[in-house]
Length: 423
Ligand SMILES: NC(=O)c1ccc[n+]([C@@H]2O[C@H](COP(=O)([O-])OP(=O)(O)OC[C@H]3O[C@@H](n4cnc5c(N)ncnc54)[C@H](O)[C@@H]3O)[C@@H](O)[C@H]2O)c1
Image (cartoon, rainbow, N blue to C red; front, top):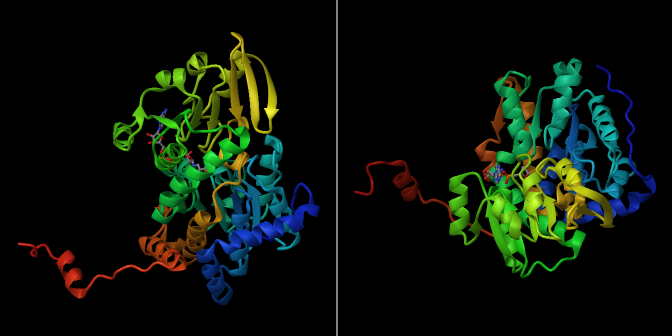
């Protein structure tokens, strides 16, 4: 199939110079991806491979796209969220790096899907997703493209859950590597990246002092642990809500108060959902919230907060600051929703710091390479990143940070491999 002539759709190409500086700054903090890019330039493992990537269009993603391009791939990029695009980065990708990019911060739903369609027009061999929107469109609306695809990669928990459901009912038609499940991804990105950047988003949007406030974190998974840990570090009184008893007991042992959302709703000052679930904050919770409560989400989709219920309960809404909407309840209370309930770390801040994305995107790059080499042996299932690649990324990261670790001695190797030792 002929590749279509691709252009791109960005807010303002004149922003490119600022974007280039941001991309170069991020690159400084992505040593592992830099090493992979150097190897890619030499080995050209992606030569002739068309990649359609639907990722948050940030300076870190730009460095991934450049590494893939330098590895021989023909890359196009579109946004995986209407609010997360850095417009200057999108402009620079198009102008300075010749990578067709379809992403405008604040794009409406129709434009968001038109951009995904444009990225699919590239007839990808490899799909890269963050939330599985690209693959979902491909498998449901663009089935004529399936035959070109050798495989895909998926960046986040929610996307992996969707893809596993597709694999189970036979909808998935090609193998996908769950980059999210690599230890060097979720251990760091979800926990430390989401932890720091979510609070950054809440603080930038509101300029509230967290010390002394009650911060309710819904979900104590990888992201929730990070958010709770960092909120505690700011001096907040952190309350955790969970549905999983093991995670809940972990939160208790980590020193947090645990209670159902119905109780937390009455006392929380700031709410942050990170569950990957829907309607975690819903009608009855809004009814019980204090005047002035701030509600935000850092989970993948904007369904964690039941916004239609909030709208129904309110008599009016106005923007009081960028990313802060004030809802006046019929009883006079005011509740504040941040960033339209979308990932607040990307909407109001800059997403994860580059040094965290370094490991996530190193995984993406080696996963794409692995897919090109091994797709023929893989079924239409969701696969983990092979452990040796995960370990290799951890090793490179440690080295780049100037840390060294011990090696097993032959005696220790024998000891660990033998059941008869230790008696
Ligand atoms: N903001 C970001 O930059 C970013 C980064 C990585 C992941 N994510 C997204 O964040 C979400 C969470 O990811 P994760 O890796 O922490 O997942 P996870 O599976 O490790 O954790 C989710 C937790 O939420 C809990 N949960 C589910 N429903 C709940 C409910 N109704 N009330 C309270 N708790 C509930 C689960 O028991 C689980 O412990 C996903 O949507 C993921 O895609 C966002």
